[in-house]
Image (cartoon, rainbow, N blue to C red):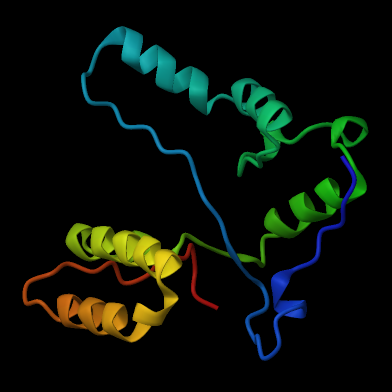
Length: 149
């Protein structure tokens, strides 16, 4: 695979954020406390399983033991991206929609699709989302980042 990794803040006019990266993650929950379920979760959290997942899916694990050997790390852009994401000084943030209450998050996802189908409706969609976001008694997460810049 050919390519080059370039942080988007360098390419977007007016972007000022540096050192913060939007990331995603795979989560697992133990819903039934059984020996088989615990065994599966222990396996999925193991460095060996994460290395295998990373190699197959081009992912990155936060577990230093799950990092590939330098010879197996892939193309230069892949190594550069991994180095950036694994930097202890970097701030890692989930998408802002992850901090939204479920009703707002679902409306946001639907509004995004509606916008793509009809960009001329942007103002109405934003007004609707703004009105919904001010609904009383919604629980908002204070941050989607692992630490504050």
